[in-house]
Image: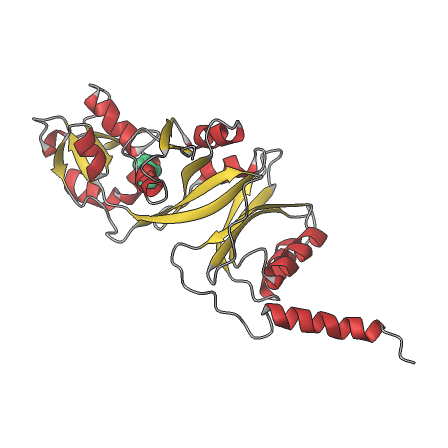
Length: 310
Ligand SMILES: O=C(O)C(=O)Cc1ccccc1
């Protein structure tokens, strides 16, 4: 069998690569990308089979780079998700003392997750943004002089030969990041399980009062729970927003199909990014009247009303 090629937010040693290791086999090829759009671009161009990218963080919320590059480019399909617990170390070249650290490089999500620790332990420190936590560690190991330490995961501190100045550098020890595996549009849809998620992009009709409520009602009336909803600018004019949504259930579920039909009837743009097993594997709790058989028996009843009786 031909080994699978996975692009991911690199360089080697990122949290994203840790997520990728949960789904790839020993033979798989890991292709580091400089940022999230580049990782997805490789899939769009057929240079890799799948991309693994972060989408949501328990502290910082949605990862805009991922949401926007899914929404604003050609069609892709999410086929799975993985959760990675996030732990940070502060790492620097040998000989650096904690009190000498005045500039720290890391990914913006890493910086946001360590704010209180930094304020309590280092005082005023400047953030030097990096494309990933491992990119900060790699630059540090390569002799960067525009910062004094990197906030990264313990694995990349070790891989890049840095000394750990402090461990457990995070405000919330239970922080988790959610990653997704993304393939081309024609990848087979993962089979239905008791615990699935569906990801959508929805635009609302402009200048229509109650449009947001109408959109949300499509989910509410079919008992479909949302697990994430984010508004992002459409980008063409001020005040135009679109929504990136994760809801519970699979497109093969009657209630999810009914939501999609309702959205398609009432919204100018609806894009389906895939249905895939949720990482927590907790079965979706169905509201009475929303199971497949409730829809099919209701449909048969209506069909019966149309039959002519002799
Ligand atoms: O930079 C990384 O290592 C990533 O994979 C992105 C990221 C950054 C901070 C928290 C979780 C994921």
